[in-house]
Image (cartoon, rainbow, N blue to C red; front, side):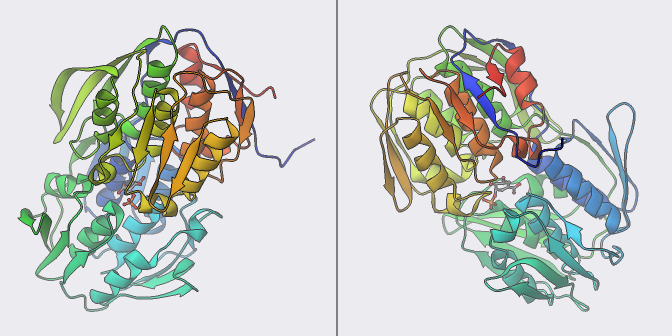
Length: 446
Ligand code: S3P
């Protein structure tokens, strides 16, 4: 009999975790490589690409725009794009599944090409705000129709005669910034985007690698990015480093499971993605970085992590953009620490794959951790390695909530289960196998 129930998964208190955790490629960089490849008339090769549902959906969408996207038997991906302004109008709607990054960046990339497309996604993505991207894209001359509140499905029509713009992005979102920088490629002249928050800069770095003219200058505490439009991008080779947002799970697991010692090779250490490592070090984590090196315009290094006695801290709110996806698993580290940890400045967490602020608070409480909910964050009262557990956590279609609470279960007194583990495949399909190979007790038994 075929069951339509989502698969649950349970984690149990485990012995020491040991070994090397080769986590998959970075999600942000993988999306960008596919999109820029599709905007390039020539062959782009991508090695180490994340082969998870979110990114595979973006690959399929690039094919719908007329790009050739293939996977070689070696595991390398190849793209042959249609050039800036050369995308064909898709015959069917574009389904981005669970991925806000795929959807929003693609909206930007097509907004200055005179074609029309319908953007949609799963139940989680159809609840997420799209106006933050769509409104600024109208300044280039694009138009759109959306459901009430700017929700998907959205029909976007690219500008017939695009114009370059100057725009201040007020939300601390790399997706919005990136969408505008990608739209700028198709508009004559130079577009300027300013942003106070220093959000991840993979789009700027990769645009340069593809030969675009990009300027970055300090501006009012943040920065101003200029992109010259109507360019011909240069085919290039992209090597995708391992994703620090996925590395975060085995990393925190090693810190909280007694006796553990693991390594995580080749992790992306872009200065705008290392907020979690900085925070864990301040909490007393035994993490070291070896062979910090450059890899194709991005910094990478090998991480070593050992079981540690963690102390709660007050996490600076301005650090949020550099660890925006890591708060769920940081909350698990904080719940295992001694003393309280204060997390603030987390408004953006309300509009992720779920309302992550509520999902974390609710999950910690059912696991027996005392937590105060704040408008923009939370205060977690650490249990010094003694989370009661013995509960099932609601994941609200959110992969990071699922993985974070499974990590918590590896060190809690009673098992911790999640109601639905299926979303983990959107970003980290190897999660269960990889964690088991380190010694984690994960299984589907209730
Ligand atoms: C991403 C930016 C962040 C992050 C997401 C990936 C990106 O979203 O949460 O997982 O690749 O640009 P916001 O830009 O909405 O903060």
